[in-house]
Image (cartoon, rainbow, N blue to C red):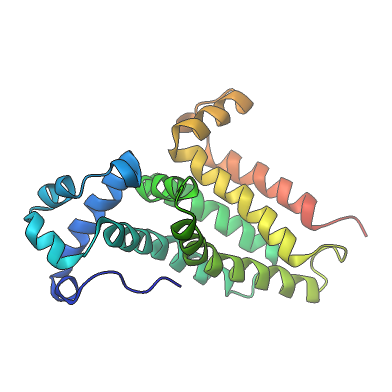
Length: 219
C-alpha cells in the first residue's frame, strides 16, 4: 500500500483547507493528466501560496498520490458496506451497480482521475497505483463470490478470482461510460443513446441480467 505522501504541516491544516486542496487537485489532475497538471494552478485555486503548497507536499507526485487516496476512499467506503452484508451475491451486485451509477455522476472528477491512472506511463508508479487502488476492491469481490460459491448460490464451475476480475472490468467500464469522453462515445455507439439521457434503472436492470446469466445456470 502507498504510505502517506504529505508532510506534517498538511496534517495540521484545517479540514476545510485540506478538502479544498484535494478537490482542486483532483480536478486539475483529472482534466489535464499528471504530466500536464500545474501545481502552481492548484495552489492558486486553493487560495494558498506555492511556498505553502511545498510545505504540505514535497513533490507534485506526492500531491497526486494523496488526491488518488482521497478519491479511492469515497467509493471504497460505500463498497465496504455493501460487500460485508449477508445479502445474496446478486443483491450485492445490484447495490454496487446503483452505487456506481450514483457515484459516477456525483464524483465525476474522481472517475476521470481513475481513468487517467490507467494510462499512467511510469511503470513503477503504475504498479504502486494498481496495488493501492485495486487490491482492496479485489479482496471484497473475491471474498463475496467465494462465500456465494460455498453456499451454492452461484454456479459451481466458476473461479471466484477470475469472476471477480471480469465483474470489476464490467463495473469499471460502466464508471468510465458516465464520465470519460471516449467511453461516453462508445456507450452511444453501442446503445444509440447519450449516456446523460439513459435511464439509470435500465442500466441497472440490463447489467444485472448480464451478471445473473454469468453467475447462475438452470439446475
